[in-house]
Image 1 (tube, one colour):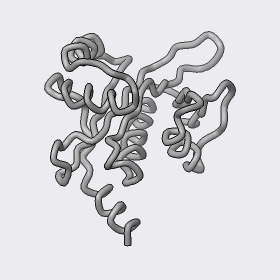
Image 2 (image 1 turned 30 degrees about the vertical axis):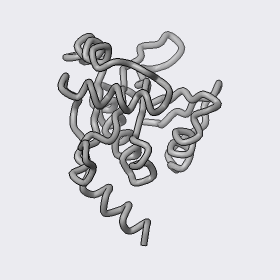
Image 3 (image 1 turned 45 degrees about the horizontal axis):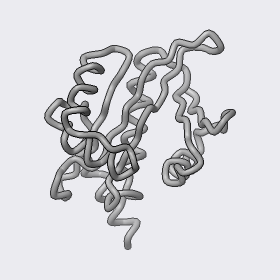
Image 4 (image 1 turned 180 degrees about the vertical axis):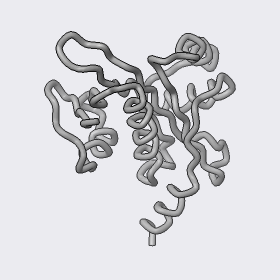
Length: 156
């Protein structure tokens, strides 16, 4: 029954590009995972990233959540000498009470699609030893290939 509710909740999620007015909630969500920032700091960072062809921030909104905004992902294009152009997932946060309901997966799908449209041949996510939730999310996808140094790379 719970998985059916999660599937239904995932269907109702709306994924969109972040706006400057999202700064306060993005700051709150970032703090949940130990990345404290003020709304003013996030607003400044969003201004620095937008509009940009090399960066995107996507938001997950749920009509059922009291705050609406329940997650975000930041993705950027990486031009590297060592490999073809690829995308880097720089941050991914889903609200504590909303995890395991599909928001993270939908945010990653939006990031991957954005990356493909920019010619990226892979999407990479660096993980730290404490990133158990993100590691589970990435490793649970059959599309993932383990990379070196705690990275997961999704082929394009």
